[in-house]
Length: 309
Image (cartoon, rainbow, N blue to C red; front, side):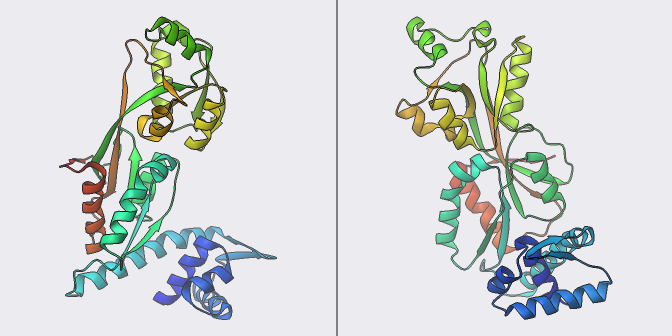
Protein backbone atom coordinates (compact mmCIF):
# COMPACT_ATOMS: atom_id res chain seq x y z
CA UNK A 1 0.00 0.00 0.00
CA UNK A 2 1.63 3.21 -1.20
CA UNK A 3 1.09 6.78 -0.05
CA UNK A 4 0.29 7.88 -3.59
CA UNK A 5 -2.39 5.17 -3.84
CA UNK A 6 -3.99 6.34 -0.60
CA UNK A 7 -3.84 9.94 -1.81
CA UNK A 8 -5.59 8.97 -5.03
CA UNK A 9 -8.12 6.89 -3.09
CA UNK A 10 -8.89 9.81 -0.76
CA UNK A 11 -9.54 12.23 -3.63
CA UNK A 12 -11.67 9.70 -5.50
CA UNK A 13 -13.66 8.96 -2.33
CA UNK A 14 -14.39 12.69 -2.06
CA UNK A 15 -15.16 13.42 -5.72
CA UNK A 16 -16.63 10.04 -6.77
CA UNK A 17 -15.30 10.87 -10.23
CA UNK A 18 -12.26 9.36 -11.95
CA UNK A 19 -11.94 12.32 -14.30
CA UNK A 20 -12.12 14.93 -11.54
CA UNK A 21 -9.63 12.95 -9.47
CA UNK A 22 -7.24 12.85 -12.41
CA UNK A 23 -7.60 16.61 -12.86
CA UNK A 24 -7.02 17.27 -9.16
CA UNK A 25 -3.84 15.19 -9.10
CA UNK A 26 -2.64 16.13 -12.59
CA UNK A 27 -2.75 12.47 -13.69
CA UNK A 28 -4.16 10.84 -16.77
CA UNK A 29 -7.37 9.00 -15.94
CA UNK A 30 -5.85 5.60 -16.68
CA UNK A 31 -3.29 6.20 -13.91
CA UNK A 32 -6.07 6.80 -11.39
CA UNK A 33 -7.81 3.60 -12.51
CA UNK A 34 -4.58 1.60 -12.28
CA UNK A 35 -3.78 2.84 -8.77
CA UNK A 36 -7.25 2.03 -7.46
CA UNK A 37 -7.20 -1.41 -9.07
CA UNK A 38 -3.78 -2.12 -7.53
CA UNK A 39 -5.05 -1.05 -4.11
CA UNK A 40 -8.15 -3.23 -4.43
CA UNK A 41 -6.05 -6.21 -5.50
CA UNK A 42 -3.66 -5.77 -2.58
CA UNK A 43 -6.50 -5.51 -0.06
CA UNK A 44 -8.60 -8.20 -1.70
CA UNK A 45 -11.78 -6.11 -1.62
CA UNK A 46 -13.71 -3.84 -3.94
CA UNK A 47 -13.49 -0.23 -2.76
CA UNK A 48 -15.79 1.35 -5.33
CA UNK A 49 -18.84 0.23 -7.25
CA UNK A 50 -18.90 1.38 -10.88
CA UNK A 51 -22.48 1.67 -12.08
CA UNK A 52 -22.24 3.05 -15.58
CA UNK A 53 -20.80 6.53 -15.15
CA UNK A 54 -21.65 6.57 -11.44
CA UNK A 55 -19.06 5.75 -8.80
CA UNK A 56 -19.99 4.93 -5.20
CA UNK A 57 -18.00 3.79 -2.18
CA UNK A 58 -18.55 0.24 -0.97
CA UNK A 59 -18.72 -0.55 2.75
CA UNK A 60 -15.05 -1.54 2.60
CA UNK A 61 -14.27 1.72 0.85
CA UNK A 62 -15.99 3.74 3.56
CA UNK A 63 -14.01 1.91 6.23
CA UNK A 64 -10.74 2.52 4.40
CA UNK A 65 -11.61 6.21 3.95
CA UNK A 66 -11.39 6.79 7.70
CA UNK A 67 -7.96 5.15 7.93
CA UNK A 68 -6.67 6.80 4.77
CA UNK A 69 -7.48 10.22 6.24
CA UNK A 70 -5.64 9.37 9.45
CA UNK A 71 -2.62 7.89 7.66
CA UNK A 72 -2.23 10.80 5.25
CA UNK A 73 -2.67 13.33 8.04
CA UNK A 74 0.06 11.57 10.02
CA UNK A 75 2.33 11.57 6.97
CA UNK A 76 1.87 15.32 6.65
CA UNK A 77 2.52 15.75 10.36
CA UNK A 78 5.72 13.72 10.11
CA UNK A 79 6.95 15.81 7.21
CA UNK A 80 6.30 19.01 9.13
CA UNK A 81 7.86 17.65 12.32
CA UNK A 82 11.21 16.77 10.74
CA UNK A 83 11.65 19.84 8.59
CA UNK A 84 13.48 22.91 9.82
CA UNK A 85 11.09 25.16 7.91
CA UNK A 86 8.27 26.24 10.23
CA UNK A 87 6.62 28.47 7.64
CA UNK A 88 2.97 27.40 7.25
CA UNK A 89 2.83 25.73 3.85
CA UNK A 90 0.77 22.65 4.66
CA UNK A 91 -2.93 21.82 4.58
CA UNK A 92 -5.68 22.50 7.10
CA UNK A 93 -9.12 20.94 6.74
CA UNK A 94 -11.98 22.85 8.35
CA UNK A 95 -15.74 22.46 8.63
CA UNK A 96 -18.64 24.53 9.94
CA UNK A 97 -22.43 24.88 9.70
CA UNK A 98 -23.95 26.88 6.87
CA UNK A 99 -24.63 30.05 8.88
CA UNK A 100 -20.98 30.39 9.92
CA UNK A 101 -19.81 29.51 6.40
CA UNK A 102 -21.90 32.33 4.99
CA UNK A 103 -21.64 35.12 7.55
CA UNK A 104 -18.58 34.60 9.75
CA UNK A 105 -15.84 32.59 8.08
CA UNK A 106 -15.30 34.37 4.73
CA UNK A 107 -13.37 37.19 6.43
CA UNK A 108 -11.24 34.67 8.34
CA UNK A 109 -10.48 32.63 5.22
CA UNK A 110 -9.60 35.78 3.29
CA UNK A 111 -7.25 37.06 5.99
CA UNK A 112 -5.58 33.67 6.38
CA UNK A 113 -5.04 33.34 2.64
CA UNK A 114 -3.50 36.82 2.48
CA UNK A 115 -1.13 36.07 5.35
CA UNK A 116 -0.20 32.52 4.32
CA UNK A 117 -0.63 32.27 0.54
CA UNK A 118 1.25 28.96 0.35
CA UNK A 119 -1.01 27.22 2.86
CA UNK A 120 -3.80 25.03 1.49
CA UNK A 121 -7.33 25.23 2.88
CA UNK A 122 -9.88 22.44 2.44
CA UNK A 123 -13.39 23.43 3.50
CA UNK A 124 -16.16 20.90 4.12
CA UNK A 125 -19.57 22.32 5.11
CA UNK A 126 -21.71 20.40 7.59
CA UNK A 127 -25.13 21.16 9.08
CA UNK A 128 -25.13 19.09 12.24
CA UNK A 129 -22.96 20.03 15.24
CA UNK A 130 -22.85 16.44 16.51
CA UNK A 131 -21.58 15.29 13.12
CA UNK A 132 -18.91 18.00 13.23
CA UNK A 133 -17.73 16.71 16.60
CA UNK A 134 -17.62 13.16 15.27
CA UNK A 135 -15.56 14.21 12.25
CA UNK A 136 -13.03 15.94 14.49
CA UNK A 137 -12.91 12.94 16.85
CA UNK A 138 -12.27 10.59 13.94
CA UNK A 139 -9.55 12.78 12.45
CA UNK A 140 -11.48 13.54 9.27
CA UNK A 141 -11.12 17.30 9.77
CA UNK A 142 -8.55 19.39 11.62
CA UNK A 143 -10.65 22.30 12.88
CA UNK A 144 -14.42 22.66 13.28
CA UNK A 145 -16.55 25.64 14.18
CA UNK A 146 -19.86 25.06 15.95
CA UNK A 147 -22.69 27.21 17.29
CA UNK A 148 -23.55 25.51 20.56
CA UNK A 149 -23.07 25.57 24.31
CA UNK A 150 -22.86 21.81 24.87
CA UNK A 151 -19.51 20.04 25.26
CA UNK A 152 -20.11 16.29 25.47
CA UNK A 153 -16.73 14.96 24.32
CA UNK A 154 -13.73 14.42 26.59
CA UNK A 155 -11.40 14.20 23.59
CA UNK A 156 -11.97 17.65 22.09
CA UNK A 157 -10.49 21.05 22.85
CA UNK A 158 -12.88 24.00 22.59
CA UNK A 159 -12.15 27.71 22.28
CA UNK A 160 -14.90 30.29 22.33
CA UNK A 161 -14.56 32.76 19.45
CA UNK A 162 -17.97 34.40 19.58
CA UNK A 163 -21.05 35.02 21.71
CA UNK A 164 -24.11 36.22 19.87
CA UNK A 165 -27.70 37.15 20.70
CA UNK A 166 -30.56 35.21 19.14
CA UNK A 167 -33.81 36.91 18.18
CA UNK A 168 -37.30 36.11 17.01
CA UNK A 169 -37.57 37.91 13.67
CA UNK A 170 -40.49 38.88 11.45
CA UNK A 171 -41.31 40.90 8.38
CA UNK A 172 -42.32 44.44 9.44
CA UNK A 173 -45.85 43.88 8.11
CA UNK A 174 -46.36 40.55 9.91
CA UNK A 175 -49.46 40.77 12.18
CA UNK A 176 -47.43 40.15 15.35
CA UNK A 177 -44.86 42.79 14.36
CA UNK A 178 -47.59 45.31 13.57
CA UNK A 179 -49.28 44.66 16.89
CA UNK A 180 -46.04 45.20 18.81
CA UNK A 181 -45.30 48.37 16.86
CA UNK A 182 -48.71 49.82 17.75
CA UNK A 183 -48.35 48.92 21.42
CA UNK A 184 -44.67 49.76 21.74
CA UNK A 185 -44.17 46.83 24.12
CA UNK A 186 -42.62 43.36 24.13
CA UNK A 187 -44.17 40.03 23.20
CA UNK A 188 -46.23 38.31 25.84
CA UNK A 189 -45.93 34.54 25.89
CA UNK A 190 -49.49 33.91 24.76
CA UNK A 191 -48.99 35.97 21.60
CA UNK A 192 -46.78 33.25 20.12
CA UNK A 193 -49.43 30.58 20.59
CA UNK A 194 -50.10 28.93 17.23
CA UNK A 195 -47.66 31.13 15.32
CA UNK A 196 -45.82 29.58 12.38
CA UNK A 197 -42.04 29.36 12.79
CA UNK A 198 -39.62 28.82 9.93
CA UNK A 199 -36.94 26.68 11.52
CA UNK A 200 -33.62 25.10 10.78
CA UNK A 201 -33.33 21.33 10.74
CA UNK A 202 -33.71 19.07 13.78
CA UNK A 203 -30.55 19.10 15.89
CA UNK A 204 -29.62 22.71 15.12
CA UNK A 205 -28.56 24.42 18.35
CA UNK A 206 -30.69 27.53 17.98
CA UNK A 207 -33.76 25.54 17.01
CA UNK A 208 -33.24 23.53 20.21
CA UNK A 209 -32.98 26.80 22.17
CA UNK A 210 -36.27 28.11 20.80
CA UNK A 211 -38.17 24.86 21.26
CA UNK A 212 -37.00 24.63 24.88
CA UNK A 213 -38.19 28.20 25.53
CA UNK A 214 -41.57 27.53 23.94
CA UNK A 215 -42.01 24.43 26.11
CA UNK A 216 -41.07 26.38 29.26
CA UNK A 217 -43.73 28.94 28.45
CA UNK A 218 -46.37 26.35 27.57
CA UNK A 219 -46.63 27.52 23.96
CA UNK A 220 -47.67 25.32 21.05
CA UNK A 221 -46.10 27.02 18.05
CA UNK A 222 -46.31 25.49 14.59
CA UNK A 223 -43.09 24.52 12.81
CA UNK A 224 -44.50 23.52 9.44
CA UNK A 225 -41.57 24.76 7.33
CA UNK A 226 -38.09 23.39 7.92
CA UNK A 227 -34.98 24.55 6.07
CA UNK A 228 -31.33 23.60 5.76
CA UNK A 229 -30.47 27.16 4.71
CA UNK A 230 -30.52 30.27 6.90
CA UNK A 231 -30.74 32.40 3.76
CA UNK A 232 -33.92 30.57 2.72
CA UNK A 233 -35.40 31.14 6.17
CA UNK A 234 -34.74 34.88 5.91
CA UNK A 235 -36.24 35.17 2.44
CA UNK A 236 -39.40 33.30 3.47
CA UNK A 237 -39.69 35.34 6.66
CA UNK A 238 -39.44 38.57 4.68
CA UNK A 239 -42.16 37.20 2.40
CA UNK A 240 -44.45 36.90 5.42
CA UNK A 241 -44.58 33.10 5.67
CA UNK A 242 -43.84 33.06 9.39
CA UNK A 243 -41.41 33.94 12.17
CA UNK A 244 -37.71 33.11 12.30
CA UNK A 245 -35.34 32.52 15.21
CA UNK A 246 -31.76 33.26 14.20
CA UNK A 247 -28.45 34.59 15.54
CA UNK A 248 -28.13 38.32 15.02
CA UNK A 249 -24.97 38.01 12.91
CA UNK A 250 -26.90 36.12 10.23
CA UNK A 251 -29.49 38.88 9.75
CA UNK A 252 -27.65 42.13 10.50
CA UNK A 253 -28.15 43.60 7.02
CA UNK A 254 -31.87 42.80 6.90
CA UNK A 255 -32.43 44.21 10.40
CA UNK A 256 -30.44 47.35 9.62
CA UNK A 257 -32.45 48.21 6.51
CA UNK A 258 -35.82 47.30 8.02
CA UNK A 259 -36.60 44.19 5.99
CA UNK A 260 -36.72 42.21 9.24
CA UNK A 261 -37.62 43.39 12.73
CA UNK A 262 -36.78 41.93 16.13
CA UNK A 263 -39.65 40.76 18.31
CA UNK A 264 -38.47 41.10 21.93
CA UNK A 265 -40.09 38.50 24.17
CA UNK A 266 -40.77 39.58 27.73
CA UNK A 267 -38.79 37.55 30.26
CA UNK A 268 -36.78 35.75 27.59
CA UNK A 269 -33.35 36.69 26.25
CA UNK A 270 -31.23 34.35 24.17
CA UNK A 271 -27.56 34.07 23.28
CA UNK A 272 -25.31 31.30 22.04
CA UNK A 273 -21.60 30.74 21.73
CA UNK A 274 -19.47 30.06 18.67
CA UNK A 275 -16.61 27.66 19.33
CA UNK A 276 -13.56 26.43 17.48
CA UNK A 277 -12.58 22.85 18.28
CA UNK A 278 -9.93 20.27 17.53
CA UNK A 279 -8.80 16.92 18.92
CA UNK A 280 -6.81 17.24 22.14
CA UNK A 281 -4.34 14.54 21.10
CA UNK A 282 -3.80 15.86 17.60
CA UNK A 283 -0.34 17.12 16.73
CA UNK A 284 -0.85 20.68 15.53
CA UNK A 285 1.22 21.42 12.46
CA UNK A 286 2.56 24.95 11.89
CA UNK A 287 -0.27 25.51 9.39
CA UNK A 288 -2.98 24.42 11.83
CA UNK A 289 -1.47 26.51 14.62
CA UNK A 290 -1.32 29.51 12.30
CA UNK A 291 -4.97 29.01 11.35
CA UNK A 292 -6.04 28.78 15.00
CA UNK A 293 -4.22 32.01 15.80
CA UNK A 294 -5.73 33.71 12.77
CA UNK A 295 -9.21 32.60 13.87
CA UNK A 296 -8.63 34.02 17.34
CA UNK A 297 -7.53 37.37 15.97
CA UNK A 298 -10.16 37.65 13.24
CA UNK A 299 -13.27 36.28 14.94
CA UNK A 300 -12.92 37.79 18.39
CA UNK A 301 -9.84 40.02 18.40
CA UNK A 302 -9.17 39.29 22.05
CA UNK A 303 -8.09 36.55 24.39
CA UNK A 304 -10.46 33.63 24.00
CA UNK A 305 -11.88 31.17 26.48
CA UNK A 306 -10.34 27.69 26.26
CA UNK A 307 -12.34 24.71 27.47
CA UNK A 308 -11.14 21.13 27.71
CA UNK A 309 -14.40 19.24 27.82
